[in-house]
Length: 109
Image (cartoon, rainbow, N blue to C red):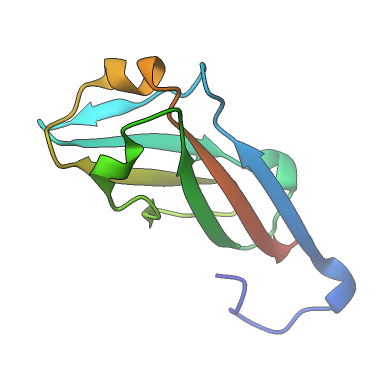
């Protein structure tokens, strides 16, 4: 993460984004887990940043767990993984406009 060594303060950056309400490409993993790979390469981080996430949508995302689950983070991407208590269908993500809002704090030099 960004804590992996001291860097110049002028190299720090806050970058934010969304996977998009109608464009989020969820992938089903088993009957009750799904993930989405998030591209943050436009942030130009040189090390793994600290990433905070939030799941947003029109309804039923309150029935999920792991909704801050950041996996396999690199300087350019991370995987967001979640579990749905009633099983999972990738069609729900589109129907309910589920997407991931994220904020990353890291270094660009």
